[in-house]
Length: 204
Image (tube, rainbow, N blue to C red; front, side, top):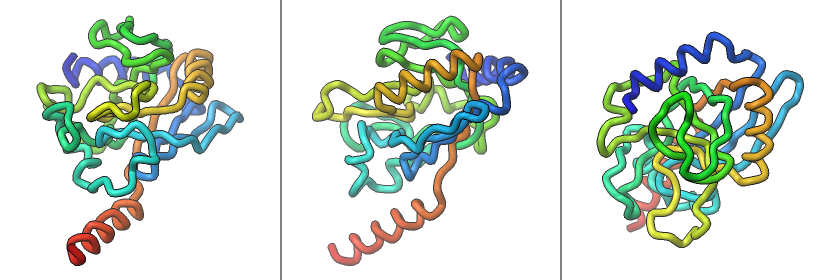
């Protein structure tokens, strides 16, 4: 599924999705939170990119592994893709189980039960190659691998969220007939990761 096709789906849903249904994801602080009308939720621990399954594995991960420009080249450590690109996304109003395909997209399969399909609306740095071969694409909010010790386990940009939180979120997205997702990269976290890398290099 091309980026432009998924963007078209996002643009169409954006016409009807309420501005009161907003999910926010701080990709480098690994925090997901938001509101559905007057109901606030989070912050919950969530992770995207760098082949991680949980925030607990964040320590020592290089900043370059997190950048949205980091493409997927394989399943081994260091070959997984970066975080979901920052900007605005639409969460489609359907809950998918493992192996199911979105009825709105017609391509790709959900990684786990209680998966939510994400389509782009307006990204900060859109690129036609985003969903291309060996690139990031086909994003979901889904669960972690059941085997956390699996080599390269984790995400190439999808947002990994716990099962209970995912089930709650899915029910709210269905009830609201979709939701907005705002992805951003915490500037302070970027500075912290750069400083940590410089310190490690100077003591090597």
